[in-house]
Length: 294
View (cartoon, rainbow, N blue to C red):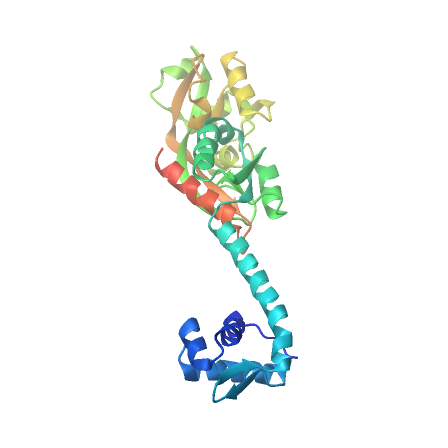
């Protein structure tokens, strides 16, 4: 027997079995009588034997047709269950989304973002990974993560959706002579002891150095942005940090706009040419709304 893939054909045969005539089956199924006859003929051609015996008093299944009714009912139920499961996912009543975040997003966006998302989609589980840019890149590419927050300076071939722009500011110890300037010329950075922070040392900040041909006088290289901020507070050097990092945590330093001004672009990345799950798409759409409202 050749494969029958159209479930509407099975439902039509069930309607004939229940109604006892092609006319009544047509009324039940929403087809014309000729339409029902055509469907039954198609099924019989696929099966290779008659399914319906037509007579003056109506239509009934042949003995062979009766043998197929229970398997067809079971198949229709299974298809309905499959459709229900698909609808449940597409309806976003369940699912898991795995998300990578770098530190400033994890600290300043994640609590409110996850709380709001969970309130809207209580049965979608969000699994968070906090790490450095390179770690997030690798985990998205290996499909350990569905999506990740990164900046546009990502080194990998990833699909990038812009969310927000964040100023990059010079951070000087309080009382530093350069803190008197209205803005810090970028080229002056190479004359100071520099603290390389964790976020984007080879990405956004490195791009500034390359663009202006700066060779920083690196005093310390750290894997954590907040540690770099603490070092600057102690007067151990100057650094460049995203404004998002500095929110509510920069009382002991002087923050200066760079001249010319510099910004990083925060966005969501996914593996290129890969369709994300409905749960991941819901999360990404929600993040877009969240970022637009900030």
